[in-house]
Image (cartoon, rainbow, N blue to C red; front, side, top):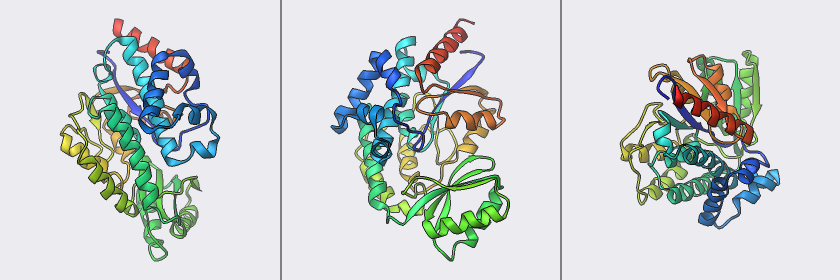
Length: 321
């Protein structure tokens, strides 16, 4: 891959669906092995939850995050088996969106597989434990950041809300207390937002309300060995490539209370001459964001057998050029 510098991106929660990964599980022994390894660590049949649901069970934070992790790492393992080399020798760069960071770090030799699974499960538990059940998340599309911030300011007397994801130039996810979220959405709609909607999430991720979860995760990370990523890894916290293991630990903990800077990460692609992106995991959310970002990078998703085979074919052809 000399001419095309490729980044592999890993999705976060919200992209899960019943049946995800089943065709890959049936086709590739390495996928079956990956799901079994995750299940063995957490003593729960993650494949059964992903393939058979029901949806409300899959939507539970721990099941969602573990299922997405298993699906994403499975696809990375297909790549590694096909090319007989680790993903960090195939990828010029990697990044994950929110919980997707753990799959990315596992695939670039920074986190041990078992440690990554334990952290993903613990992270979800800490977030649920820290929630006061009167919170959630919402999406605002079609307004500039300054206008979204004014909507947040206008709602500050009602309750707490903050930007938790900046996914595209005019696409924001807001986390906070329900009354404040309703006020933010009402003002954003008045100001001409193309879309405002509440998300089917009961945890206010990536904002100050997750302070207790951050402290718990930070304590958990103290006993985890983290190595330097073996290729370029973009941190959600800084939107920059991060190499120092202690910085990686701090970034993972801080991410509990800070927003995902995905738009800024995509804006870095031209600087690094990244022209191809492959989304490893369920859905095609990151693929759509990258293709619409106008950053000179063509993205494709790999969430099913057909798309995975197309990716293998494309990368094999690129290698022979």
